[in-house]
Image (cartoon, rainbow, N blue to C red; front, side, top):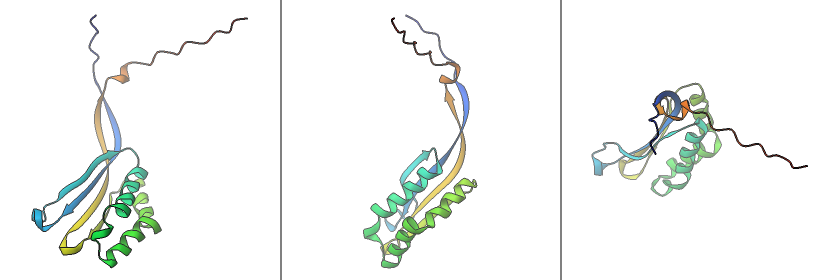
Length: 133
């Protein structure tokens, strides 16, 4: 059975580009992506930074940077980042690791175009259950 081709319709979406980059002597201090994704809400992006700060990088931090990371993640730095994203501004956080290496997290609001074939079709209505009397 042959089905007709569905034309794709461009849809403008809004999201947040989340990126975590590592700089170090092994790469000549050229940014090396650790995590790149597009998230739907600013809360998701800030939550991703907070989780990565707490979980992944604590062992390579100096005591001063460890205090900075935990303060940002648990005591309020993230609130300012969330407010910036709600205003449509980018936010970020940088930590210095031992040996001159460092890690940066950036979140930028973005508008992008996606192609969506579902915009032309409405979902079929659900059948109504009939009561027998």
